[in-house]
Amino acid sequence: MTPEWICLLKDIGTWLAPLRRLGRRTLPLPATHENLLAQSEALVDALHPRSMRLRLIETIEETPTTQTLRFERLDGVLPPFRPGQYVSLTVQIAEVRTTRPYSISSRPGAKHLDLTIKREPNGFVSPYLLEQAPGWEVITSGPAGSFVHEPLRDRGPVVLLSGGSGITPFMSMLRHFAAEGFPAPVHLIHGSREVDDVIFENEFTRLSIRHVPFDALSVISRPPPGYAGPSGHLDADLIAQQVGNIAEASFFVCGPNSFIEHVVEQLRSLGVADYAIRRESFGPPRDVTKMPGWPDYVTASDTFKVDLVGQDPVTVRAGEPLLNALEREGQSIPALCRTGECADCRLKLLSGEVWSLPSAGVREADRARGFVHACVAYAVSDLSLDPGS
Image 1 (cartoon, rainbow, N blue to C red):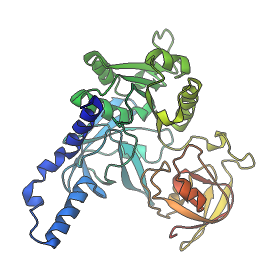
Image 2 (image 1 turned 180 degrees about the vertical axis):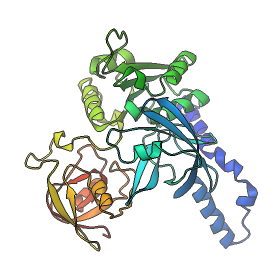
Image 3 (image 1 turned 60 degrees about the horizontal axis):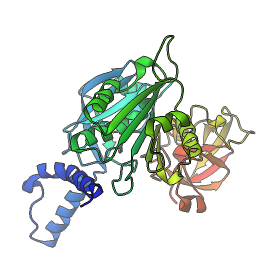
Image 4 (image 1 turned 135 degrees about the horizontal axis):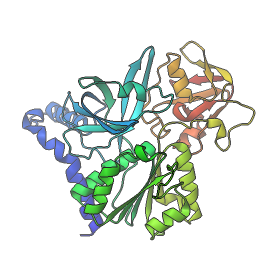
């Protein structure tokens, strides 16, 4: 049996471990077709719950701007998940009901679920979450997402490139690898702005000392005077020097959109094929008008009328994702990933024009049929949209 198959089997064992705690009383042996159907539905819900009710049990300060919120589940056991996946929180802030996805930073099989959240400047949801105290309850989705290491696909060295809070899914991966065995050499290059804002620095440094297949490098983009460590941005030379075996490596990139665009460009300059690069963006661009391809005749402050079939027309700002703008106006749209991948927030474009992030994971079938994913789409004209198509 190859090492890749061994790693995959270990992963399967980890994912299914929580099911052992369900016991026969929860899933009785079927005696009828009705019992069989009920047992199947219970098993599917245990593996892939549509929602979970979580209670905050502890807050852990990671840096001056970042905390880990530790949760327990109130309506069942925590389901199995893949390191790198996320859950989406549903919160009500004043008159706005919205969702936000956050990567899980704890490892599969833990009795708690950790979400590590950075306070964003002028943020809407992150400041609210970081003000909560133990005992607070929230509804989330079940674990979701495809930003995961696949042993049969990612066979060479694994390179994790993160910026800021983009390290959170990688910590789940590293904690899992440390517990179950590293599948290959793993290189982490983590970029932060400030020396005192490096999330999980002590932990990934300890892991690099204890586990030979793993090495970590912290890079500061705004170093203080006299700083002797690596500084600047994650460029091609730095990546090549740290990784070595570029040709056979699998690359995972996570962080703000601007960070991802820069790092992917550097990887391409090294000859890395797109199929070897997986990416996970955290939040919309701070200034979408600076993104390549944005129409130069539209400014971020321009406003447009949006007519959503079955609801009252609203006015939205061009520089804000359509989903966020609609939520602010009290129009609730189903949403999960908020990166364009899951299609929960898709709307049929009846008239008008939107601009979508070029790196968003919008399905080609949706593009061809005239659907837009509201989380990565921006109004650049008056719009008419149908949420029921």
